[in-house]
Length: 279
Image (cartoon, rainbow, N blue to C red; front, side, top):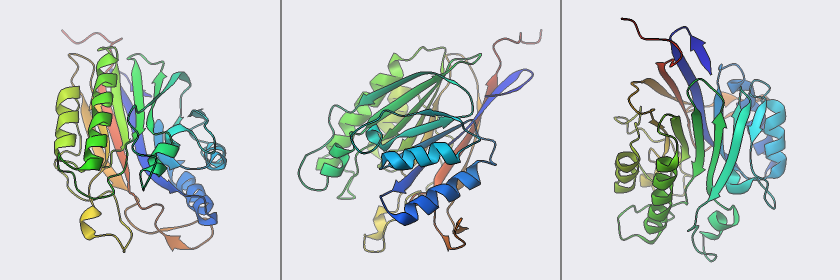
């Protein structure tokens, strides 16, 4: 958390790391740490950390974000979720999605990873709650209300709406992750409107997912968000930008993408409640 007299500011990045168990993944994650260690971040939310070893590696490499939150599972953190913070973490919770898909077919990967929401709270002048999440994939690339995968995503959206509603209304809440549905879809609209969230990138439609060349091009969609619920009665400013949408030089000297997703960075600024407003 950064303070500048009368204001507070939090700088957060979210990224799906495409953390499949390969040797190149280790190189990509070390490169990601190299890039973000100099970004003066307060919090980073990562998804698809698909091995416990990768979670350990990231904690070791991210020296600028020394405080970690995750919930161990059989072979990877629950949900594949890892949250790193510059500041000490006061409280950690993990809420599994009640509906995580079928145990047969492609959804078995979502079920096995035990998807849900990882919640941390930082002790700051304004209570700060960070929710890191990764919803089920839509393997049809079809987000109509009748689609089988969209219906599963809808149950997860409803659970996220309930979670946000349960938080102290005086808290600043940031909901970040890979939502697996596009900005502007009915799922997005329901989540943002019913949870009282602000999307700093609401007018942007550039894809944050770069699908494999064998997938249809319409899979390229803006599906990674940082959504903000301000404290009741508080006005905020938010700036957002996309990171790692081009090749970078890896720690092994090769050039390539850091993931099949781009990162999203959001800087949120709001008044410091410990400072009296001017007369």
